[in-house]
Length: 357
Ligand SMILES: [Zn+2]
Figure 1 (cartoon, helix red, strand yellow):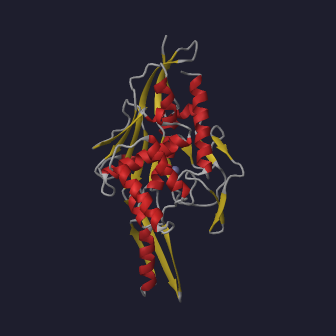
Figure 2 (figure 1 turned 90 degrees about the vertical axis):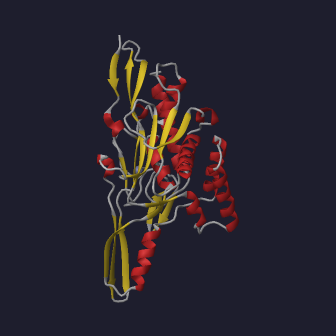
Figure 3 (figure 1 turned 180 degrees about the horizontal axis):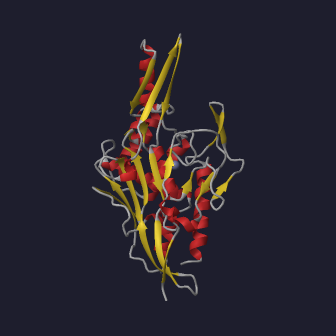
């Protein structure tokens, strides 16, 4: 006898990613493995199992033709983000071979394939509903005597979610008989940001010596021009981590701030387009694809969140946890807290799937 059962709808829940606010409490947080059984981590176990499933690869569809970053660089940066999380979870070249990364003109969602979609420049095509709702940002400046200040009211810049699955199971054993993937993990990025690539970020980086800069840019270009192995991607990510590279602040805000400072105007209040490096946002949204949640937000009790004496830094007088999955600094690498978090996510997913596959 077969019964059809769908996983809870929480799998279709989008995590909205806003700019920093408030203090940070947690080291890491993630959904229970049962909620993200077709995340990349669960997908690996499903593909390695004997359960009936029509897919033999975890396909990541990267939509080409955006206005900001070349197709080959967007593909490379997506691969780097996936390699970072998979490697942090303890996976190797063997599991990497279960993944395919393809550029396509369109990456439709809610399809019956196992995989993920990455959409930059969302909202370019009309009529995509909630996905078309990334807000605009605004800069507000005031001058009083000789003092002046500017602040940015920024909206959501990216969204990420994990995928969902339907399955039939044997009611006697609880084991799954067949699985259907019904929506993909997804990472989308606002059309209201002037995004730039990692190569551009590195060129303008002020933390690095010229020699380090040349070395990392040469590695990036070599990777974008050829087929790359998992180890090469991981090696590149290690360079970013070793140099503790943090993405630059919004360059357009700095430019407008300077312009206001030099002007005689009393006020400025206008919509503007922030200029941001994509990679740290991509790393964060792909983290959501893996089932990771914000480390600074209170999670429902059924979710997994861990607070320890993890790494902390003080920035502008506020204590912040050091995590790509917490709002704060724009880390371009996974921190110790992110790595502990994704290892926990993998453990929980595999424990759940061990009872189902
Ligand atoms: Zn987020």
